[in-house]
Image 1 (tube, rainbow, N blue to C red):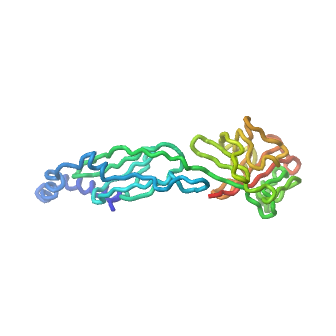
Image 2: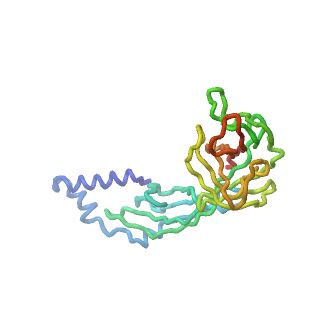
Length: 282
């Protein structure tokens, strides 16, 4: 397997050869420069490459057309694959690329043939299966969402976290809420919600920002549709207008959102808001 590191070392060796005493390096110069021969043509290079998306999209399947397999059938012909915007490259002859966003991507291969760089034709792939799927998470004291005290998450010195029991009323467990889903599509910033039977409820857009209105708030999520669990939110959510939530927990596995009664001037333990707890379905 020819890696990028190996190719760079090879080019460095060629530079050393041409810089040294020609009497010592004449055979190498003749082999790799003077008599190197004609490089492979662009058409020939393209013909030995393949770019495939072997996994079909299926409902509720995480794996799909975002998996793209790259193959160079002549590994002795070293080079690198260019597979995304900017400097995304791989030096492997056979590799699987997993795209993190939907879209159309151009892929090509640059080979070194007889001391010259040859670039293949462009392969185009369309990726449509990238999404971020979440459902309710029942925290250890038994709630997936509830109305609760404002600001309690700040008191870490007393052992509180955003998932602590701040419930004042309206606590709902997983059995009551059902297995609903909220899906974020990164490309186009689309958001969709599905009921417990898998039926589409609402479709809209979302946005994240890093605004931190209070201590330990990690940012804000804004949607123009109600999120799952909104029917239990006594502060109300609307379709077609901004619904702004504070992000209290955001990891690869968990999200905790808070819908405050007051976006400014909220009193810890005096005012209240709606908490909802999600977990990744991937």
